[in-house]
Amino acid sequence: MDKGRFRVRAGVRDWLIAVGVAAALLVTGLSGQHSATGPGLLGYVLLAVGGLALAAGRRAPVAVLAVTGLCSVGYQAAGFDVAAVAFLFAVYAAVRAGHRTVTVAMSVAVLAALPLAALASGLHDTGEAFAQARGALQIAWLIAAGAAGEALRQAEQRADEAERTREETARRRADEERLHIARELHDSLTHQISVIKVQSEAAVHVARKRGEEVPETLLAIREAGREASRELRATLEALRDDDTTPPHGLDHIPDLVARAGKTGLQATLMIEGQRHEVPAAVGRTVYRIVQESLTNIARHADATTASVRIDYRPDAVALQVDDDGTATPDAVPLPGIGLLGMRERVTALGGRLLAAPRREGGFTVRAELPVERVS
Image 1 (spheres, rainbow, N blue to C red):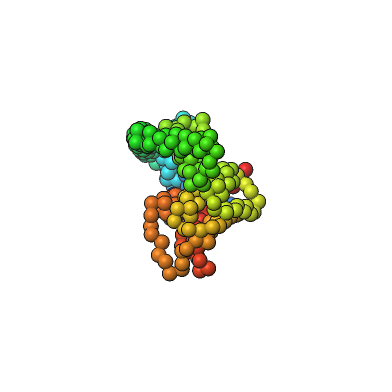
Image 2: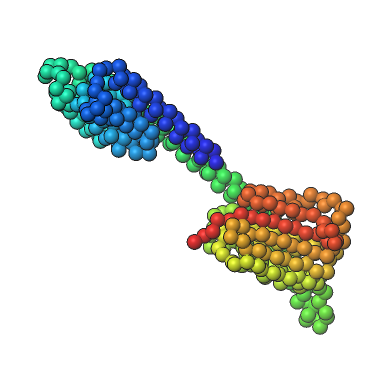
């Protein structure tokens, strides 16, 4: 957005310079005595075109250099003793854009053509023609314009290099911090989650071996341990930039809803709209919102049913998770870590999130995430 505004301002500035140069050339040309028809009229046209062509100098510097050079030679041939100001601006722009060889070649050609153009006008002898050409395009000014363009080009290159260096430094620091977080997670959580997983697996195995009915809560603990282990492993791999295991996304939501049903919650999934590919970050965020919502419903809502609805729209993915729990419209939801995490994920992608009690009772989580269609 900011860059767009900058481009608009740069374009306006280019046009102001072009109009100003064209006006200055025309005023200088009008100060002399010239015919209003024939070569005189053509000279005025060339003065105006040579100045206005500078408006395109940022987009096509070589073309503008050629046009202004031809116009300078043309109005000299038409008998206009006017300095080649537009050509000097074009030399500056072309050198700044990095076209040094072409600029030197065209400058030499214009320097050679100006005396011939002055002779062609029929208003000067050979000596006067060379003197007029020398005054129209002083070599010192030509060199100064080229040097200024080259200096600015090098300054911009150094600025770009400094920006790339800063970005690389920031990326390296982020990589180091990510690895540090991965080590901390591995050291602090892996052992505890492994203990929960192993103990729950053993308890289920012993109960079944004895012929006893396995409590649903124990099965839920075992499944939660398995899921936590998978999630931790996937998180550690992502932090370490290991792409061998793809992150969870939209394709994993049916399994997530099915696992929620094993805890005694009647969970349903509805998908609407024409499905299309979405960025991985959007799919991962939708998965996390559904996961966190179903976890909150199982832990806090005292609900019997939950519905998950995913709506594929041309420019967005909409998600809604509802439950029939004990939340009421006058209840204020506590901003826990889960809700805060959802909001941060959605906001980072430029989306919108609503998490609030429903009027008919229960709780709803609605999210809308913008996407760019992947062809």
